[in-house]
Amino acid sequence: MEIVYTVYACIVGLFMGSFYNVVGLRIPKKESIVSPPSHCTACNRRLTIIDLVPVLSYIGLRGKCRTCGGKISPIYMVTELVTGLLFAFATWHIGLEAELAVALLFISLLVIINVSDIAYMLIPDKILLFFLPFLIIARMFAPLDPWWYSLVGAVIGFSILLAIAVVSKGGMGGGDIKLFFLIGYVIGPIATLMTLFFASFIGMIVGIIVLKVRGQGRKTPVPFGPSIAAAAIIVYFYGQPILDWYWGLF
Image (cartoon, rainbow, N blue to C red):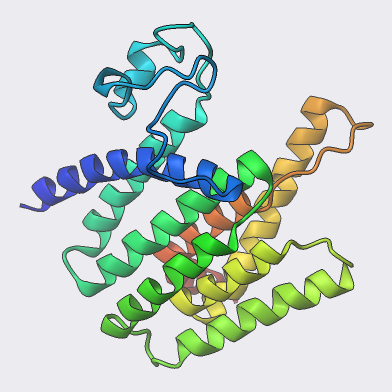
């Protein structure tokens, strides 16, 4: 049955990933997520079920619109695939426990802000505020040990990012600060600090790659949200083993 649940979670994740693309791309523009229906951004043709099968439609259409031949951004397929794999992994890793609800909500939040930050360099407050009550309720049914770790983590996550923003005079976006409040609430103080460390390291690597690809002389802003999302996922699932390994070195 474990395999059945995992496969089912993967399928659900694929379709949710398709929906998260819509949310991440429309909410920052203050557009409805239900109207107009999904359409080609080049020719405005309304997409049919043939165009909307997660991952398979993109591969079958070779990343192009059936009508105008306009290119479809690979971020759509990548988001669908990543969401499906993460949903499946969370189900396999955690099982049908209360913590699974926290994991799926956390993954969903991170996937959506990843899309919006890549597209617009923006993490909308509306998305963070939407997930806040659901994460609080989910954590009540699957509390950290001790339970107040969530509160301490939220305060530390928010405070550290706020301090960085003040010292760097705007070098840290407001969305990143609020996002770390939610991350801290979900994973606690120590894991939050680990997330910030890994996010900074991942962001540095990405920044170096961007400079190499686009040239040293071009100042290209790089969204920090994807680095935060990747780090938060790593720490959520493997933070304690990583910490145990680190302390074992001494």
